[in-house]
Image (tube, rainbow, N blue to C red):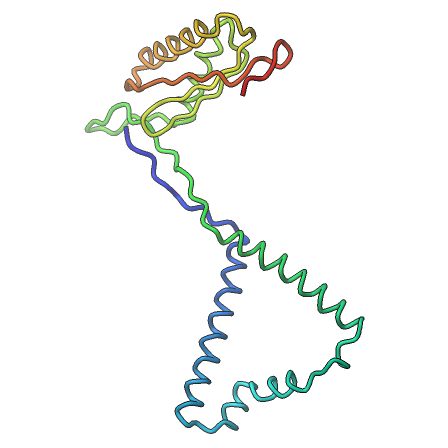
Length: 201
């Protein structure tokens, strides 16, 4: 069986975060270049005219305690809080979120083409086989790299081991009947029917 490959999801908001990141990188590069030009002896007045750094520096240097009243401080504090929340959320969206891609199960590969089964179809067949067991109230299948996992909830706690063995046998028979390549079948008890018993998982 082919192993599942990993794909990194890219949320739509990640594009917005990427735009802000690119703008910040360009600003850092630009003003870094301005510093290098100042060091190499380029006219400061010309660079100040192009970049506006001197005007910004003079404005910030001229600020004093009288310029920050209660209203101004509240506005700046609120704006800073909003900026932290927005940019923090965008940064969180930028984090990679890898997940496994769904690969088909190849049944036959011949000269005329390939017979393949989608993972969901295989999982659904396993779920139907598990629900055929009298003690199973719900079932959920999941095709992993090398095995088929089936999580079940039972109606009764009595004879749980026999019920799990019965589910495993039925799923294996279903795979064999549909000529699906043999694979390990792992059956896990996740809980009891909430209307009949207590939750185990």
